[in-house]
Every structure is written in C-alpha cells, then in structure tokens.
Length: 175
Image (cartoon, rainbow, N blue to C red; front, side):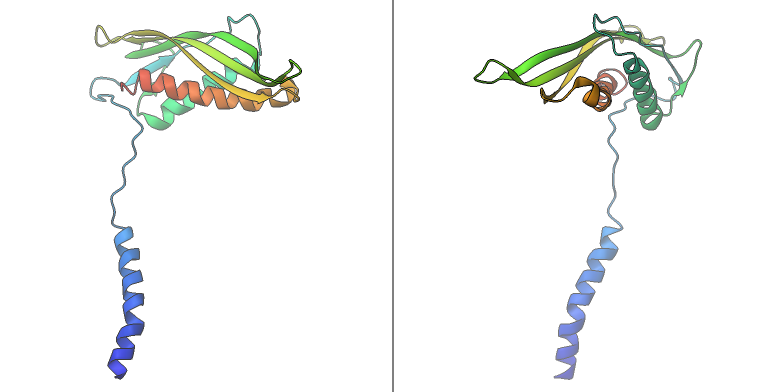
C-alpha cells in the first residue's frame, strides 16, 4: 500500500520532469529565408536610398536604410562594404502618400493611409540573370483624428520593417 501511494505521488513528478528534460532536447530551426551560398558570396554593398517622392519626410531615408542594413547583418553572414562587392542593393524611395480611407456618413475620412513605396535594384555581380529591379509598397492606416506628426515616426518604423522583409525575401531570401 505504501509503495502504491509513493507511486501515485512520484508518477506526476516523473512525468513533468521527463517533459521538461525532453523539451530541452527538441531541435529548433531558425528560418530567416536566406538562401545564400557563402562560398560564392561574401560581400554586399547597400547604397543610399534617396527620397524621390513628391511628399518628403526627411528622417524616413535614415530609418529605412538603418532597418535594411540591420536586417541584412542579423540574417546573413555577408560583410557590408563601400566599394566593389559580390551583391549590390540600391534604389530610391519613390512614394510617400497619404490617402483618406473609411469615409463616414458625413463624408469625412475616419482613417488615413500612409503608403511608402521603394524601388530596389538588386545586382548579383557573380551570376547573370539574378538581378532584380522591382518596386515594393507597404502601408499603415491611422485614425484621422490624430495628427500625422504624432504618429509619423512609429508608422515609418513599422512600414520600413515590412518593406525590408519584402525586399529581403525577394532578393537575398530568394523565395
């Protein structure tokens, strides 16, 4: 009887400990989408992305460029260079637009959409036919009762993150 009680007490403890120990042995994988052959590609040059949009928000250029460089550094083993390189990313910010959304019954917009568009040229100096010249766009909506100046930095950060993810997947991720 005593051994039966001991078994009932120890069984849950043993089960929990087994799950805890086994949980530490489960392999984990980081899927960042990078499909770079590091025996061929060692360096990348990321040019400035000047703003060529009709509406200009000057901090956007630095925000976008920093996000792009940080993402490449975090997700690849490529060394960034200022000169000749195996891969090149260049382009321009071609759009920074505000459009009314969700018009209410009194013909006023309750939401405004900020859309940022970036044209990217990806140049593979090691292999022909892999170059890309593509435009990427992302947006965020915000309440029209808010001033753009109050939400602009946060929206630009969010949109830049999304754009960089799209650009990475289309170029270095090679999905």
